[in-house]
Image (cartoon, rainbow, N blue to C red):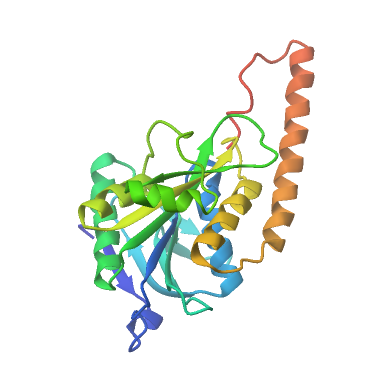
Length: 260
């Protein structure tokens, strides 16, 4: 394999399978707190979205995964189709094991993703992720950064907070929007406020609530709530242990940034 390749699965090859109504690309690849990945995978499971394609790349880490069945599989990204239950915009959901590992690779891989999205007439992109603060947050806000000024004003009305998150958006969550804009596409990154040092289901829940409003769909968050409670309980326990260790003089300041 010399370059990034997208392979259509059986569902993607069926006649009319990829004819989507005003398709929106939803991206949830691994990142801070695994927020985007957790949120998008929850949508796939909740709505029983159908896998239509897989992306393989020589820019992914040189390893295979061993499964519980005793077999191996390549690292990959996956595309799923979710048709809107209320006749709104259909969705192409992108999740995966990893992201490309170098700057040059990100350009190549994201370019292939956008080629695929463009081939089905896609124009709108929402990337999902976490915005690390290093602090526990009881009610995570969802920050936004959009491709166009008029889109900022529209999304503010849907609950996104603009002008607070600063810095850069690293990886596919940012590159797909930047490169997409050069192709005439529009979109925004939805960043949930998170500690950043652990898998944050509670933050993913906040992101999904805003996304559900944007897409005009109802997303059942019951199972995600259970996981959020578990992750929060774990983090609280760890924070207490850190404070105890500091009190005994066995740990310096620095928080829980080492927990991934």
